[in-house]
Length: 387
Image (cartoon, rainbow, N blue to C red; front, side):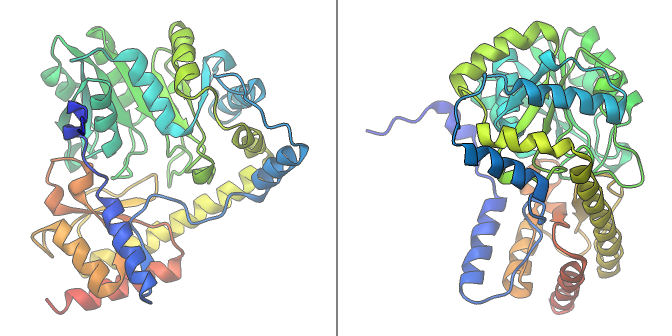
């Protein structure tokens, strides 16, 4: 007899994976598919990182590391925060994790009691609400829109806060909108959260992928926040599954205990490879790629506007456009399926990102080269000209 935990009734699938599955089916049948659906950089892992991983593996001594990660990698991240952001972050507060998802699991596992509520912007990254539910917490959506650049405000937080609210999760740059919070805005949110005895968790997973504005970190102004980051996006290491989290010192020991049981340790080869991520040659490669992403954004935005997609706010980070499609179709899900079937262009309907007008929005990832992006716009235009 199958006995599935009650919480699983609230855990929804990642709908973009259905689009991806269909894209693979069409490709297997010989169709040329342009992938604008999955949030994964198309560039290969930088050569210095790959070479560092290969050198380590060639030695053959692939053993567990401490549960909190290699001391050398934690120290390298501490120096990175100081050099790039002027932020003083003790290596002892840096936790290396199996991807940013592992960091979120540890944070929520340590912070969430059954019934605790977490405030989350809607639209937002879907896994956040499902991870909260997995720890018997309750995700509470804060509807956000273009009037606040799809970011929450202290006034919203104050109106939604209840006695059992545990904290607020925000992202800068955000997925799916690509918008940013300024440091002043993060500090204002933290003051409001702290005044109510709560916790602020800041997702900086797309940090570094900024356009027209310098990257920043909440840690340059605040110590009493949880900050989650990843080697996947800016550093181009998605498949290595490596992330990190910076936490207030008082939480380190409890997070260590949980990490020991959840993961034993992060991937040892990935950690040794990531030591090369901060070398000048690697950072030069990453900055070239950031400029390429900016060029892609600047090419795709006007092309889609010409077709009839609307953008109330222009993204300044990540590699997504969150397009209002209400002038083109009644349903983003139906439009996404039409685009993949008729145009061979895979996109993500707003359904994945919450309940705040998902039918009006489509997420489009500019994670392929400019020529393919222009071709995608041409294909979409031709399809929409023939309802």
